[in-house]
Image (cartoon, rainbow, N blue to C red; front, side, top):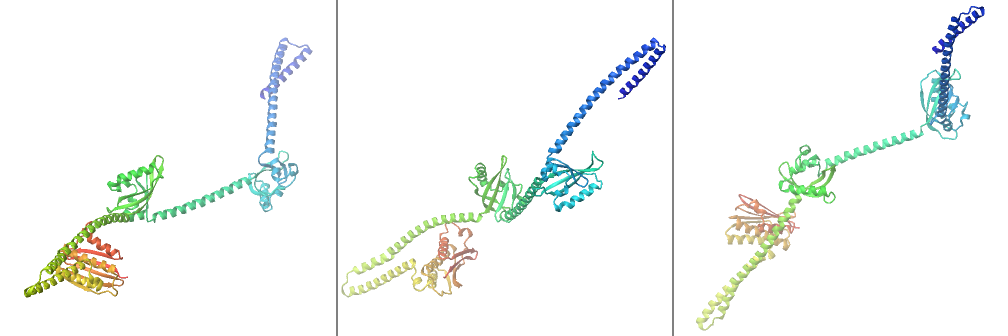
Length: 554
């Protein structure tokens, strides 16, 4: 621009010089040198004018291009205004609509042409108009900041919908008045999303609370469970165990076990079986999950556990979760049953041999005593008789025969009494026990004391025989094994049960003899009592052996 001004100034000087030259020429004062100088200045001015003209032409083209860009921007702005996703409105400071785009017309349910001149407040829900007027008053007061209002818009022919109005005050390009430029956005979708989010948040809170309660309940159940619950990591180390059950079963606290290996608590002879079971579980997780194995408790007791375990896969490592129950009592019971079975087999063989021996003894007694007596009687009867002397001899033989018959009868009674005492059937249990004590005293030379209270009602024959055989076995053991010199038998009633006690002053029975596999007599006494709901208690000390029989009388 400065160049153009300078070029104009030079051109003016050149024209002045040319006018002066013309005047001098007209006055006849022309100077050739002056003419050349003026021509040269005119040429320079012409060139500068040409350059200025070219520059003005370029500026004109740039101005045209700028006008075209402004026109294009105005067109684009108009398109953005007209086809924007939100509603755009221009109102006066009192809220009278002057301009509106297509989306505003759609949201308000009125064509853009019909919106002109209408107050924007008529489209605001009645309950929200007070807030809208407050906003207009703030904008009229000259606040030029952007304001936002969440309200409800009621379009013609449409139900009310939540909307956000954003407004800014600006100077009108046409008038000096202030105009308000509004953005109207339908936020129904946003509100729906917010409601869904709130619902999801509430649902998540409810689920989290339910999970928290479930976790508390689960932890309470696990912590107070009667069974031991534990978890092992990939190295077989405890990562969790419920404290109460673990202390009750093993004597350890959870802190004492966490970090220790389970296999270290397993007795060495059983470790291979435990490792093989864990390996099978990892390879076939759904095939086998119950296992029984022993653990060493804190007090060195061996505790048998019945375990239901589930493998837990963490990448390539396998841990285990398990619930264990103390089955030591069941294992002991199984061992007792196994031992009892062995005892029963031994007892059966023993009884068979005893039966055969008893048969042999009875046969021997009959052969030796009854056979010999009957043979002698037969020989006495076959001897010839004659004369006085023969008659005297016959009288003596008759007396001998009678004695032999009496001896045979006595032998027969003794054999029958050994098989089953007749007193038991005729006189009752108390009389049979008293007879047994007297017989032992006479035959074994042992001092026997018997104290009997008696029965209100005599026991049934089978029960009476069982009680008699128990007392008989206890007396026989005192004679054979205890080396006793005194035996005391007592009987008393206690409510609906009778108690019979047999005590001696010999060597007391030892504890290992009570459960020995060869203690057939003791097993027989116990089984006879159990058959009728009773029990036999045997104890031994330095003062002798004490056998007590408890038998229900009903």
